[in-house]
Length: 400
Image (tube, rainbow, N blue to C red; front, side, top):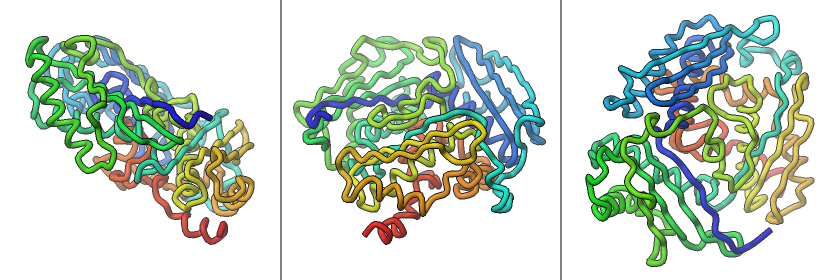
């Protein structure tokens, strides 16, 4: 593995069409689970021009106004006027019932221990979880910074601090590494959409974004842009309008920024728009959880956890741990300790993280919906169960 390199990761704002679709899909999942924790849901959204298409399959006692849920998200994101807006966009739906004879419709969290082996996965999946000591969230620095920039862009847009900005924007951050550790910010690229082509002129736009977005993000960070950092704003020229009138969107198109910004591997399936019984979603959360415990316990500087599940099995058919030469003890020993501490059965994961009941408990603030933007991992402010460090002390006791 190379030790000196530059790595870039991208994030997009809530108004990007792909993220808009992810958010709508997860808000639909939340809406069902808020009423019925045992609901089974698959929700996919696609948007282009003024048309929003929703394909939803469900098995539930809940009653959800799917079209209104989607319009509410469009409004929350900031599309209140213009050619694409929450009131006037065309919402088309295709709603189908999942077959109850084939799929479970039970609240797994209430099952007794002796029934957990009867809950098997319904799809093949190989999932990856990653953690490293580059940031306090144990996320890779490039994607951590890219998400921080898009989060700040959304704040500035929502607060009308720069009234000429529209909700669709992206941030790309390049970080230089030496001996596999970040040493400087190589580049920052911001692509933002404006209401008018020459308002403001490029120099004013760059100054405004430097003052309201870049400086606040880096103010309290140890690693800051320096005199050699390349800062580019709309390098291909002004973008007018943006959003679904400019480019189309689809649920699951941005899986790299949902995970680790390609610094660590991720599975090939989308995370958004799926209820907790989908192992390709909750297995990814589990893999991240385990990797984070290992790094936080000081067993390795970085760690990738791989889980493979097969249809008809309750447990993973494979668990692999890779520490890229940074482990403080043999990887086989770490793997043994993890097997002692964590139950990887699908039903046990759902119970341990309380993935069916949390949407009801969190209420209208949502549980899955907020994950759709700025990544599913490293989100300390959301109090996500897979981001907690509640196995660290027990892991240290076993390992040391």
